[in-house]
Length: 347
Image (tube, rainbow, N blue to C red; front, side, top):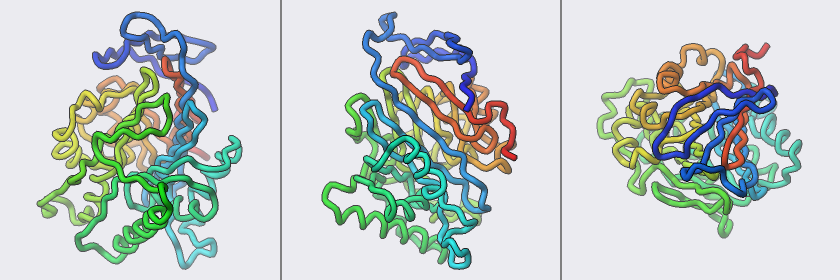
């Protein structure tokens, strides 16, 4: 992977001041403490890795590995895994992201068990990897928003949502192996990180007018997306925001009015809904320096979020064009490495 970082001159009042330095050909954002000096004892590194997920003509997929300063390893979503009765492997497109991408990465880095898995919501392109993982790799704990869709849905959605409910119940049967989280909760996953739940609230987000949505976007899709587990992770002065799959309508009418928007400002944003679902208001609220969208090449070049993010000064990475993207923070500055920094599609 080639290390790179695009220049940024944005200044955010609620985050530490930034100086731009070029070190060994990589452009780094040095985040100065508000009093004007660097932190005397920078904490150990926090690493976020966003995988490129192959296009199997289903979903879009998101899988992040979070390696904490204290040496713990978590996942935020587990990528694609659509059970198939017609494929000999048992998986549509002969692909399960946990089997094919996540576990090989973990083994390469000497990880023998996961301290936890965060599942944003119950769609197969986010929890499908967990279906395989739960039987093949030790997982200490599952975190999610606890949301259960209670409305009518198609057979496909009913099966998908029900499958996740069964997985959740497996963890609930183990003492201390499951945690439901809502807006304002603090998650003690590492003493050097401040992890706060941004959404959803305990009462969850609701939409009383499904007739306003396209027929291709039923409540079993958009309400499950809307109630994604959104996390704000702060490592020293570096802030990451992982909002899940919440869609544009729900961002504006539910998320933004529900929380102090200052909490949404971040250095690194995982684009909601793969960058497909986005609003100008959200771009203004978050104003990231770096955005990463996990989406296939066929969606990448016309992605709705890209011009909005660039308009607020963000450097945009898209896995379908840039490949695997990794952000490494030491709590005072961060670097970004992209597998294909020139944005060429994988051959």
